[in-house]
Length: 620
Image 1: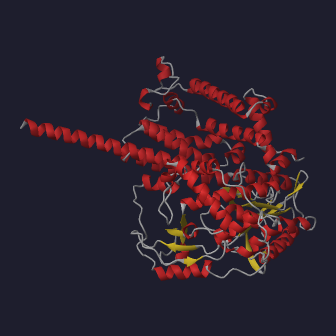
Image 2: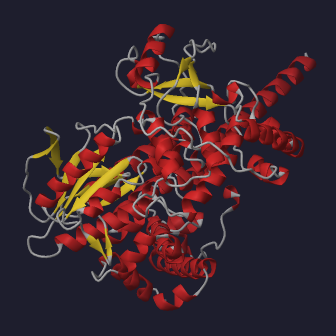
Image 3: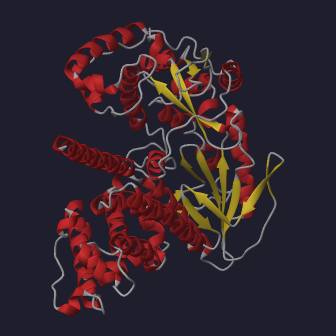
C-alpha cells in the first residue's frame, strides 16, 4: 500500500536524521573534551567504551579501614596556638557583589556534593543566591559555626592500575558541597592577598600560582643544566624528590602554628581551622550510589578544596631556608644574583647543586627538613640525574636508603636527558601524537560521519596541543619537519588521496598551515608572553639577566631575523600586536612556500588553478 511505503520512507528519514544528530553530538562532546584537556572523556568517546566500575566491588569496611589508617590518625599535638584566637578582629559585612563574582566563576558540569545542589542551579539565580550567601557567610564569620555538610566529602574511587581489590590502587576524587566551595573561595581571596603582601611563597614555587606554569620551571632547569655543563667536566646534579601523599599527610597543628607565627589574620585562621575541624569522608562503593560510613579526616589539607593548594604551598614555603643557609657548602647554582638550590612545583621538588658533594650535603639538609615537618620521602620514585657530557653512575642515599641515578627523567611532562639532548622526548611526543591521530581517524571512519571540519578541530585541540606542550623549550633545538608526518598522514587519509599528491597541495586545498609553522607560532608567542610576564616572574627575570648566553634565546632571535623582524622592536609593542605581526609573517611565508612547492603530477596548480585563499565549502 502507498501508506506503508510513505511510513517506511518517513521512518528511514527520521532514523537518518537521528543518527546524524547523534554523530554530531558525539563530535561536539569530543571537541569539548579536547578543548578542556579531559583525556579520560576523550578516550571514552573515541574507543566507544562506556564508563564501567571495576568488576570487583571493595566492601565498605575495607574502605573505612583504609581511610582510618591514612587520614583518621589523630593530629600531632605540636605547635599549638592556644590563646591565639583571643580578641579576634572584626570583619566588615560581606558584599553581595563579591559573592556574585565568586558565583560567576563557578564551573558548570561538575558533580554536586553531599547537599546535591548543582552549580547550575546557583548560577541560574546568581543575584538571589548572592544576597542569601552574603548573610550566611556573615553568620559563619561571626560565630565560627561552619555547617557540617560543607565539611563532608563523597569520595569517588577511580581505578588506576593493579588489583581492583586494593584501595591503594584507586585515585580518589572528592565531591564537596558547591556552597562550601564558594565559602572556601571567599576565604582563599583573603588568604592569597595576605600571602602575596608578605611574600611568603618564594619564587622557587610555581605550582598553583597565577602567571606561572610548569614550562617556565622546566626552562629554568634546562638553562641551569646548559650553563653548568658547558665548561669542561662541568655538571649540574639534580635530585628529583617524590613526597609520599604529601597533601594528605601534613599535620594540621603544625600548619596552623606556622600561619600564626607569620602573622595571619586571626579570624581568617580561626575560620580555616573551623572548616577543617570535624571534616569527614564517605566512599561511593557501587554504581547505585551506596555509601560507606563516614570516616573523620584529621590530617592533611582537604581533598578537592580550593584552599588546599595554597595551604600546602604555605606549609612548605620555608623549605628553601635551610638550603640557603648552607648555600656555600651545598654549592647551589646561581641564576644571575639568585641562588637556586631548589625548584618546586606543588609537591614535586628538585634539589640542585653543581657538584656531587654539594648534592649529598643538600640531600641531608632536605631529609632533616622533611623529618621535622613530618613529610615522607618516597625513595623508590625519587631519582638523581646528573646533567653532564659524560655517562657515569654513582651511589646515592637518603637516610641510608638508596636512590637510583638515571640518565633520563620525565619532569613535569618533559623527558630530560643527561646530555641535554631531545631525542628521547621527541620520540615520546611522536608516539603520543601518532596514537591520538590514529584513534581520531578510527573514530572518523566509524562513527564520525566523515565530518572533516570536526576532525580538524579535534586535531588542533588535542593532537597539536599534545605536540606543542613545552615546545618553546625543546622545539627550537630539533628539526620540526620530523613532526610534519603526523599532520600530513591525517590530511591525506581524510581526503583519501594517493601518494602522488604532494603534501603542500593538500594543505593548499584545505587552507591549513604546516605543522612546523604552527609550532613556531607557539615558540615565538611564548617568548613574547614571557617578556610581558617578567615583572611577576622573579626566576625568569634572573634568567633574562644571567651572564650565561642562553642558546634558546639565540635561536629565537635568529628565527625572528630570518623572518625579517626585529626582536627589540617586537618587545616594544603590546603583546597582542606583536603576536599578530609574528602570526601574519609566519603564515605569509608558509603560503608562499606551499605555492612554490605545491606543483606535481596530481596538483591543481599544474592545471592552472589558483589555490583557494579560504577553506573550501565542505569545510564550512
